[in-house]
Image (tube, rainbow, N blue to C red; front, side, top):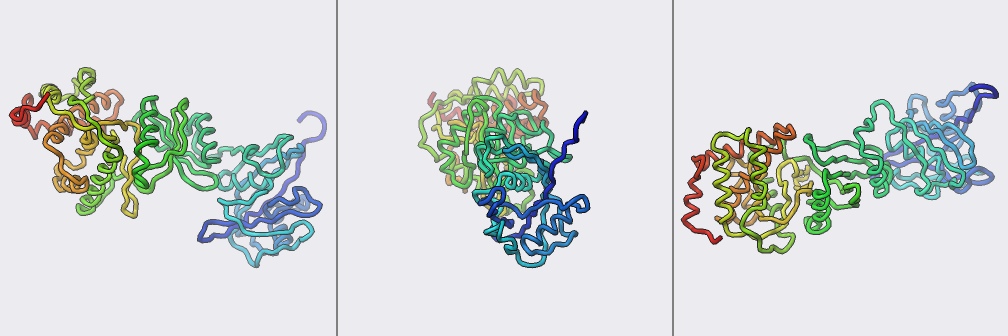
Length: 479
């Protein structure tokens, strides 16, 4: 600083006296009273340093004893967060907030001239009115931040008001880099819906596409924020979440908010972990495949069926997908796929029902309580029910007991036409997966799709005319 006196500002200390209860963590607050700043507002026990001889920990212990009567050992003091604050009147100060979980004595009002009430409050249910500076420190503390800036504007109220919340968390070492967080506009959209977000964790699938974050609210709660890779996926997921998905109840997330311009949604979190990759006993696998079948049935019955066309919609992309996948196909694959496509055009139409569109183990969550949930509806659309069994088929390969459990949970066996249509769906979905996986460098998708085609070749023992086609042709399906 050139010329004049160096800037100096007060230092104060704040006590976060914390206790754990069955309802959640609580902190001790006191209500200011008398001829003091912010009279009538709730605040943490706090105070100033007596002078340069006193360090911040000593000051905290002294102020806590003077105001509440509790005795605190220096060994039980933990640094929580530092807040650089400016009041609406322009005065700035630096506040050190400390957490204490162990103490001696029972808190009580010892300075009735400046405090007329004292009580415990849950961190997720703080009282109103409250000093904005104190609320900023507690919000930063809950967010896990070590440093925050809280500079109020001249017209801001002294008491906390969400509309004039000036808290700014300063990232520290170990925080997620900015690149791991969404665009600031998406962050603003999400925080308007759920309140301040303390933590963003990128949970996006490895391959390119839509982005997903798990977010933790500063006052508690967990949600997911998703940015769709295109407008079509956004419309599909939002449409499903607003129409038929609510009928699934706790087995599916609930839409909290959507922004078409940002292609973003906020949804509730479901308990559980993806079934994909989990280790279970054969009997446990049969049990949750039965649940998968029941969940598929609930999806397909969530809206009245309506008549549909005979040919799969994916046939329209056949030539484009063959062009992109051809160099990765095994000998005879293209001929088999074309034979199936030709036959599919002659199959009777199946009813159209709501389908998930990406019904596979990584989108199915199994909770510790054994409940099953489904996520990710961006590929949802009307289609034949068997569409949802195509991507799931890899999970029951060489395990007829799992397929039988799935069908038992579904409540009925597939009809002969559905079985034949499923074979077609398997081939077309595998072709799509090969061209997409090779283009995006997704080895897992590429390998899974190749396995599907290999099973089809083995099952039909022919590269060009599978025996099932010969059997099916005898039934002469109606065009």
